[in-house]
Image 1 (tube, rainbow, N blue to C red):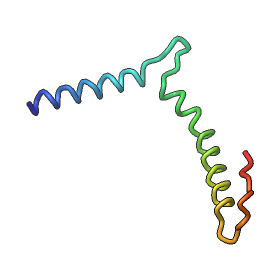
Image 2: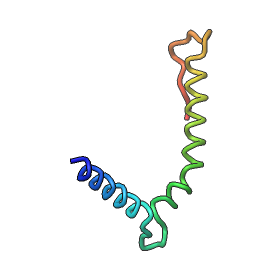
Image 3: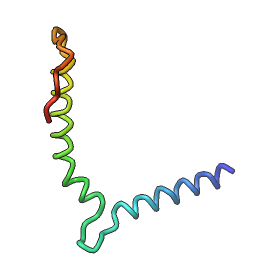
Image 4: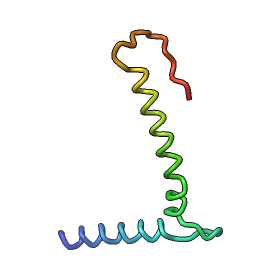
Length: 69
């Protein structure tokens, strides 16, 4: 049973890696897209973190504070 389980997990990992690295019509893979979009997502996450820190900062008791995008 352990051998079958290991073989299935290995096949799933192989399939996932093959899918993620497969080039599409434009010659780009899913990994290429993620590498291009990652800096943008990091910047958005940093801005979100700063907004949340400002909103929940100690001493800021105004319940009507809005977080601006």
